[in-house]
Image 1: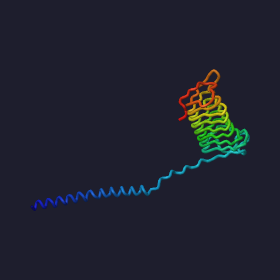
Image 2: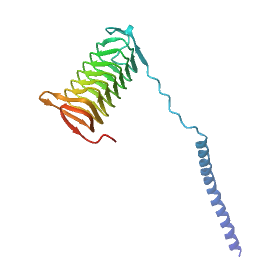
Image 3: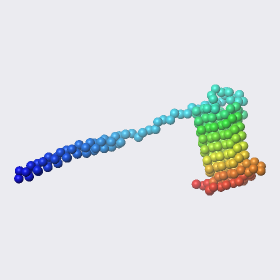
Image 4: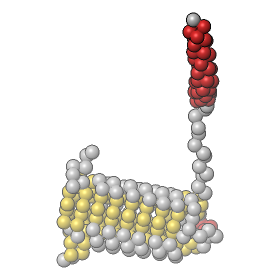
Length: 233
């Protein structure tokens, strides 16, 4: 009987030791979970770091004497460029390269002797001509005409009130629209639709491909039209 009682006592002691050994671990885990839950409830939603505003270079009559004579280097501008309206015909003798948007006011006709590369959008109220290639990181919006001695590339859409002309190719990831004419010496490609009364790709005796989801309106004067879809999605 003594041995039985001793066994029971030993069993109770061992059980108590096991329980006491596990309970702190479980309690610690519960406390950590509860603390983490409280922290999550009390934490305010993280706000993204404010992006620094891009500098805006505003060019007016004082910056042009028929051609650009301003202080800033237009071939490596880290921001937007705005050119005032009613300046008449002005020119940039070299290339224009900017990270942001290019905005040209009404009544100002800009000619770029080199390349034009805008990381943002291009907004032209009147006429833009470029001796070489035009590259745009977003869309090109023009109230009148855009003409390039090279190609015209846009990551968005291209829309012109009158004409869109390029000696090279014309490529837009979205729609291409012009009120009078879209013409290129090489191929024309739109990721969306094309809409223009006159569309021509290639040169006399050397037609090139015109690719789009759908020709909405217009007539192909020169080139081979390839429609890839209805363009309504």
